[in-house]
Length: 338
Image 1: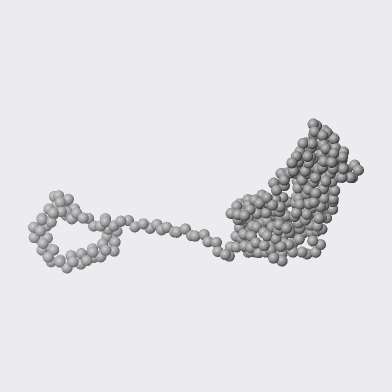
Image 2: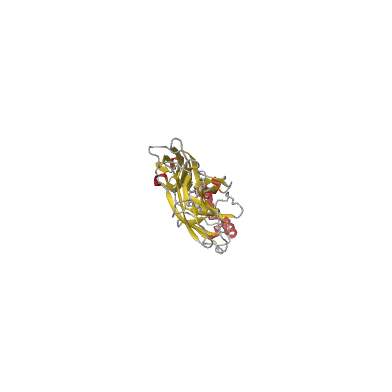
């Protein structure tokens, strides 16, 4: 790069004051020899002037007024796209788990991501449903039908590039429970001898009402005298919260127990329990302990999509409406105090 000096006096070795360009020009004009030289070479100066103009114009000569040019470049970030080709199609097959022959189960299904957010859902027809989810994800599916089939939970993953997947679910059909008897384990009658401060044994025998079906997570409700009965124990089961939809008559109370799912193939299930009578209040002759068995079913909140998985529940009743879900409650079994 050629740089021209803006101070002409600095180029004149004869100048006493090289920094004073005006003084140099005045002396140059008085120098006859220099004037003659310039006159005789006018065209050379014209040519040199043209060349200088061209060199300045194309940047070969820098006069110190041109800003430096940056050579760096900035690349805009690429936008991340999720086209439809990144979706995996899932085929859902739902069958009756206890049917003697191949039987389709038509149920509602709900799909959630790993964080519990609701993704999609639908209903199977002729035992088949289909939905799409993104690649590279972990999901959970819940399928059930209130009056038809109890809930099944299925976790699954979709790998990168997995364009299709098949899920096969087997569901247990819904059944009411039937109480065979509530009895005295000694003489096998429905009467017991009850006394103040006594602990008296009793049995509860029950089964599913329907064949090729089940009663899901049964809750056994024992209704007893509020003051005469201090406590009830049943088959080593844990006590559960009784449904709010149940009401107790005056002077009565309900104690509930959670059992495990019973299948029709199991036949009759026997639970051994005890009635612990009050130390201070004697039971009345003819008083009773009344037993009911109810199933546990799935249900969703009205705004379950916004709540995600937190909007799905299991219970003996819908807590939003306090109405029964699943199969109807069993008929009662009664144990009478002699």
